Each structure stands twice: as C-alpha cells, then as structure tokens.
Amino acid sequence: MEKRRIKTGVKSVVFILFLLFCAAALIYGHSDPSLDRNPTVVHTVQQPEENCVTVHFIDVGQGNSTLIQCGKAGVLIDGGESEYGDKVCNYLLSNGIERLGCVIATHPHSDHIGGLVDVLECFPVDQIIMPGLEEFNTPTTSTYEDFLTAIGEKNIPVSAAKSGDVYEFADCMFEILGPVSQDEELNNMSVVCRLTAFSSAFLLLADAEKQELSEIESTGVTLDCDVLQAGHHGSDTSVLPSFFDSALPEYVVISCGKNNRYGFPGDKIMEYLQAETIEYYRTDLLGNVIFTCREDGLTVTTG
Image (cartoon, rainbow, N blue to C red; front, side, top):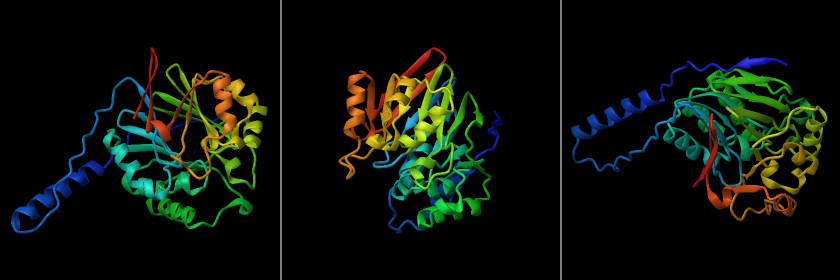
C-alpha cells in the first residue's frame, strides 16, 4: 500500500489580493466622490476551530461538493455544477480556507466537476486526484475540457486515483477504494474514499453504482464507518445492501437537489434506512450538513 503526504505549507495569495483590491477601490472612490458605486459587501469569516477536522457536505443542489477542513487548509471533493462555483468558493472563504492541499474530482460529470473551474481560479491547489480514464471512456464535453484547461493553466500536478493508495493530510487520512477497474459507465469510475479523522470514519461514494460497490467489496478493504455519503445522490442503482451492511454507518448523508427531476433519493435507500433505523441527513431538506471530528467523538450541525 503506497502512502503519500499532501503538502500543507503553501501560503495563499487570495487574501492579500483581496486587501490590495479593497485598498485600490477606496483610493479610487475618494478621488471621485460623485461616482455612483455599489455598497461594499463584508463577508464574515469564521475562524477555523483548532484540534478538530470538519467535514462539510455543501448544499449545491442536484450535485456534490464536500470539504474536509483542517484549520485554514482543506481537501475539496467535487464542486457541483458550474453555476455553483461562486457559492462553493464563497463557502470556503467564509470558513477561513486559504488553500487546498488537494482537490478530488470524482468523475467527469458536470454536477461534480463544473464548479471546480472557479475553485481552481480562487484558491491555490497543491494537487488533483481524478480517475485515470482510457480512450474509450474519456468524455469530450465542454465541462470536462474546461476543467482540464484550468488544470493546465495553473500547472497543477495530477494523480490518477489508484485503489489502495493512502494520502495523509494534517490530522486526517484518506484511502482510495475505487475505481477498481475501467468501466464505460462513468459513474462506476467514481473515486471512492474512506476518510479517517481522529476516531471517526467517513465513506464517500460519489456516484458509484452497484457494480463498482461490488468490486470494492470484493477487494476485502475495510468499509466500516460512522458516516456514509450515499452513492449517486441516493439513486436506487447505488443501493447494495451487503455493502451497507459491511459499512454499518451510524449516519447517512444524501446530497441531492430539492424537487430534482430524477426523484432522488430513491425508494430503496429510504426503505433501507428506515428498516435499519439509520439516522440520515438530506441536503435538499436541511442545507449544508457539517460533521465535526474531535478526539472525544463526532457532532453534526445543519443549515
């Protein structure tokens, strides 16, 4: 098993540029008092809590975006559709994020990578992890091409997700569980991660469907977790009872959009959660879902 360390020493220039921009705006404004200007909007920046790891399931409608925060740095998994790029950037900034040690683009669907183009413009990123695709399953969509262009312009190192690779980041560690093999269906090329922070574990399934979940299960990796993010926004195609039984989550998070046209979450996952009396949180009903991991346990807030 290969272990890699994500660098944590790079300083962000976003805040400095913001201050210079504000100073220039003030000077320009005083030089011409007759100019009709929009009022300045002041964003409240929350000071990151020390000695904890927070996992934010950000409400990006019918899409996915998850922030793993350690102080002023973080790992971002997906960024929702392109229309949510600004929201994700503002959310990260408001929570005190100055840089991203890693961005994980789970697979090339627009509701997962669209907003990442704005994120790459807004934050310094040390590296990107994404599935290694072959010629037969590489998409030619404008969203995917824009994402690759943004990576190239920023010259960000890219690593192909490899099952069994382990990455360390500040007080947490995450293991890549999938994809295990190549598949024509891009949902089954999703980067599936198991995150551990202090004594808590998270299983993040992206859009993995039954086939990929079955392949991951067959490798014999550890699946048990405290929190499981349902695959494919709670789709019935991502419910594999044996996988869920092995994971034994205490909480399940379903990232989906309000009144979405796909009918997510599906009946199968809701029936399973109710039958197993598993506590669940839906972003379409509750907004952002935030878990805080400390040495003494796990807490959750919403809104």
